[in-house]
Image (tube, rainbow, N blue to C red; front, side):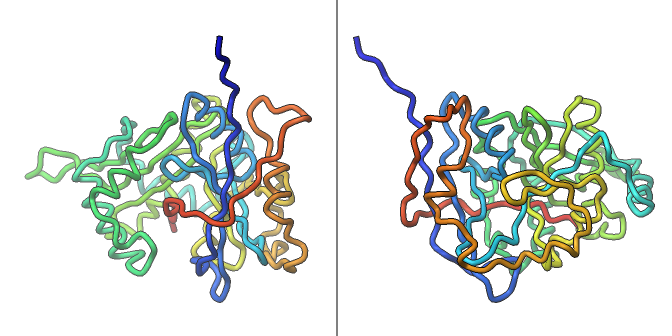
Length: 297
């Protein structure tokens, strides 16, 4: 009788590329495939260690001379909206939320294109066509939902116009905002902030302790908004800590303070791992799907 042994996930590292958040720096990512019957458990476990999902890949920044990118999450039980966030809730209280299966639609893509063309026309996703968009939405081996936000139709329309979308993963300890986009003409409504606040409420009702926001990067204007949310934790130095004073996290690191890739991989805890787990070497370079970040303002 043949017996097949479980295969531990293999980790790889991308080649350096220009950093999209901090000028003059380069980024590198550590990643592994997300597939098979153990996909959900692997995603749950690695998300707690600062990893993010992009389609069927889990990745985490592993730059050679910088450690500025830190995973961020909101503690739902301790969160209280500030004055500006309460205004955002009030301004968008008329919106209707609907959670659907991860299936791409033409309405979603049309909104996605308006959002990119207005807000991120020079970003890495600006050239995504409808097929790549569909892959972003639909290629998921875990429990994922598309949260759509619509407003009341005008008198001459029957359908509720789509104004916001969030691709959301359901983890064992929270909700992870994989990517969100919204109607750029409604910038004054603070839709991006509202989507995060609404996810806090969804998590609260579901009894989930965290809402994962992706990476916070001190010094990056694109990511400043995350530090405005209360009860925020960041994954720093191998553990989750309260963000405290955001200005105290400079993100500067001396190259010699960054551990080699093999040591980083050796410290990653896997589902049902024991102390005698085997180290998995990292390949010198590989290509991963482009990471997707929620960028609400």
